[in-house]
Image 1 (cartoon, rainbow, N blue to C red):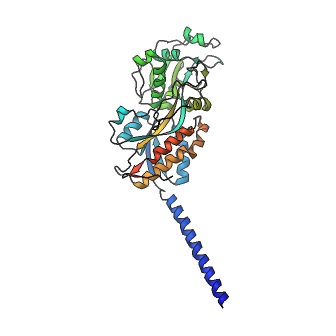
Image 2: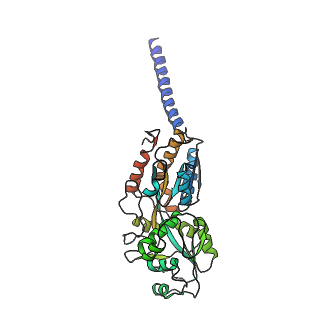
Length: 361
């Protein structure tokens, strides 16, 4: 009888321990899925959109979260985050201190990847790839060079069969981080460009046709014989457009690639991650390279925002700078270097809701 009683007590204890363990596991699952059904809205840069589209679709399927990102350009994204219309925004041009003063709240920058702005063209020059120096590139977009067989282009492309054809410049018509990257580069390498045009998301263009977003510019280049324009690398690839080989600061002609973009980003990253890496000092670095960012408010208790949505937002961004990086190379973006990831982690951990830090990692 005593043995039977001990056996019954042992079984009861085992059941209790199993139940406690199951509840603990269940609570963990409930906590993990507590963000299910959350809807996040975002807008901005088209430069990283192919990557974001891939990331968001995969993350949504894994976590039952809806993420709606509209590639309206960096300028549009910044306006929407300033007006607190979206949960976060994409930009290839970081918000400068002067612009920050006009924002109701502190906006943080989370780098997500590194990409190349390439110079694509629609002209038959034989089997050779078009080589361009910084001076020639600036002169084309300034309207100083107007023919494909101009002596300055022929000098650096002696083996190319350059036609006697008018050059049609294609640029962005909307406020664009891609434009900022391209014009930031030209402003560093050309005094005439810097004084006459300058760097910015929206410019007063000396010459050319305007297209909306990277897709619009790529489409115009493809449709317009004799054209030349700038787009994010994957848009050139998707449209089967050739890309120019650009001479960098070290005098080397470098093609855009994951490797050459990574080389360009081998620099010290400031704590707020706001930095330009165009016209790199790296001998093998591609010179028109940039980080791109997602931006959000440090204090998240505003409007109709909730703690649940804030947690979902931060978990998504944390995933993007870690597990999500596996998608970068597939789409010809360079992954974040380790020092940029460390900076981004600290920034994400600083986000608050009603003054209290949200992310516990």
